Length: 77
Image (cartoon, rainbow, N blue to C red):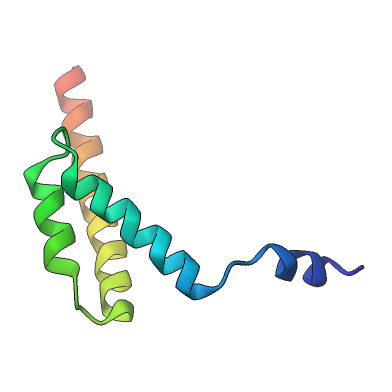
């Protein structure tokens, strides 16, 4: 059995992956300890073109991670 055949056997259907993602988002939206900022970002992302959204999320992660790391480093000095 080839490696490709093995990996295909464990792949889930996109509909299942989407349902899992939606359930996780719903959980975050309903969790009282999650930030309002995160909840608003999730709500505002609904309906955006998924390719554009993925690109925006990547860019946001790069920018915020760099800033947060620098802020943490400054706070630890």
